[in-house]
Length: 465
Image (tube, rainbow, N blue to C red; front, side):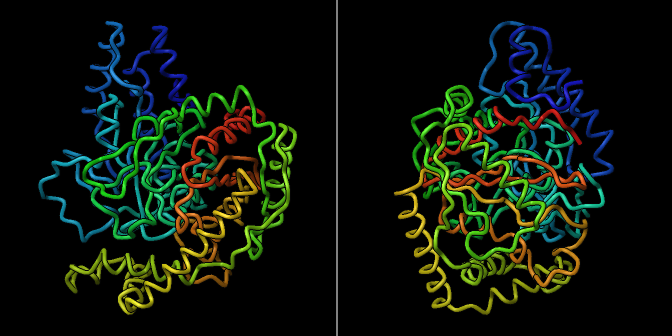
């Protein structure tokens, strides 16, 4: 079985002729058949198409003519991104399934160009609005480590798929933590690259908070995926140029050469977060590894107050915009929590939005100045381990919205910085803990190098769900 193998390992096996894309895809599909009834990671699987694409890839490898960096690698895509020939329902009854689906999102188009085998689409909360994955359309997505717990969200299907061995890489989206939350809860690697590094089409209703990035079993796989999906697309006016350095090369350099001399700030609470004791201990032990690797690690908070209220204005306004054209009958079928935040978002004024944007700019300025002194910032990814599946907030929590338990993630959507989560240990109950690595804008390669160095020192794939 190839479940648990990385994309880079699969490609090496294809190259050596010891394994074929058909075998890898068949194994991924078998794993879906075996485990997806428990975790509910997929809302669409196209077995026939995947096996046909795998057979075409196998023929190319046998002829010594692979085409693209991911030729024959089984991957999946979050059901927020458009996929030609498949519906994109976004976890919602409000999207009409029977329409023409003839466009790929930019990142999906790049996967096809590099001949990845897209086996299906992964679950999302309705319109990707919250930090757990359940929706009126697709039900509850669960954590592969403990199916009574949430996989996180909104890319919870993606994280559950990768953690369960249902393919090697899954593309997710992240507007406030939606890659990092589930990757942390599910024990996989995930990165939200610098805004604009991966083009987006159609534009997100959440504006420039929204990023696209990979979740994977290894840093090298995520870096390889970024080499595939980055670069400008004429449909995204805000996308930046392709970064000159290969992300895969950066990850390889970090794993091989290390990070000696890198200036790293460790902020265990960002100055205002309450963190579970077990999570805090696991993260602190992981941070010590960076010092062992020769980095200069200091305790330091960035110095901004919790920007959650400004984030709510930006996020809830986006939610309201995403549902503005719905009929009253369609609104009645929305996730009740989504319906509430849409009503709240519709009540904000233009001045409210501009004030929130000013707060966002101030946080960005603070982080810009912070990174004049530090190459990277490390925090816990989540202040808590995964909690019960099927609820929006942990039982007994004072939080009323998902932002109440995700304080480490959304600030770095506001600042558009690259931020990754690395598996760094487990609680006594066997639930994964993630460590967040944040870099200055456009320092994605640096983030990947540091994560790869940590992975090399403390490998996490020796333990599977």
